[in-house]
Structure formats: C-alpha cells, structure tokens
Length: 71
Image (cartoon, rainbow, N blue to C red):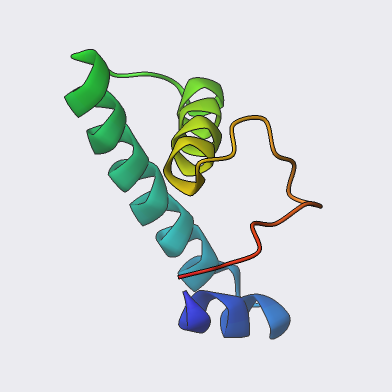
C-alpha cells in the first residue's frame, strides 16, 4: 500500500491500479466465502464497510467518527 500511495503522489498510475486490483481480489474472495457467489465492485465496497463496522463493533459508524482504539 505504501508503494501505491508513493506512486500516486508521483503521478505513476500503474502501481496504484495494481494495488487496487489486488484489494478488489481480496474483497471478492471474502465476499464469495460469506455469500457463496461473486459481486460487482459496488456490493464489494458495501461489504467491506459493513465488515469493518461489524469487526469494530460499531455498525453504522461513519469514517468521521473513528473507534477510540485502533489495533
């Protein structure tokens, strides 16, 4: 991720696209493990947010209200 962010800051899009593709792959695998089928990016993003909120124990919490303890 650091490499992708550094590349983004240097206007080098290829590493950024590679990182995003990898993240989409991880999300797709996780979604398929839970739901037994694949999904498009909009559903994957919703799944990622819901999963993060559930793991943090704060469903519905917005990004502007981060948990008080980050592990």
